[in-house]
Length: 170
Image (tube, rainbow, N blue to C red; front, top):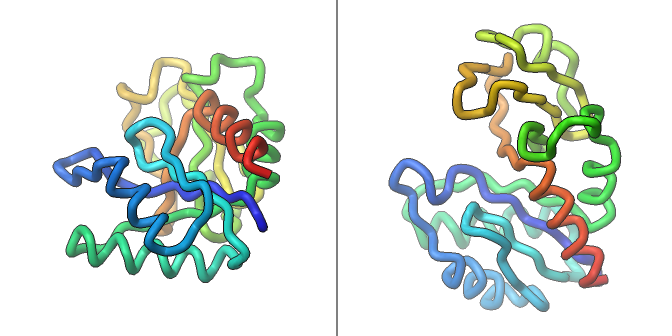
């Protein structure tokens, strides 16, 4: 049994409301063990014997059935989540000013090199993440990464907490 974190993209923003009780119910219906959510931004923790690709497909299909439109889901094991927290290249900065943008696949340096509207943000490549430090705050930023790959961002305080909660499920 492996502990996982599923990160949903774009829920509870822009009118796409998903109750966390509904998300937990979806996970329960899929047979995931110990399903629970963390904060209302689409973070799901659970254990499963299935692999990442199958979990991603199952969750995305169930969420599409629930919403009537696609919702991207990034999946990480407890160990991968912990590694993202530890690898933070901006660890000397407040966790609420640094985000990890999660992707399904590794990104290239080109995503950073072709970023637009860079003001005072600092960017660094991770494994399947791009880290961004927002000295002036994320809400004021107009940053756009290069490429068209969809990802979902979580601040490093949230990443650390999700890593801890997932580790506790192992």
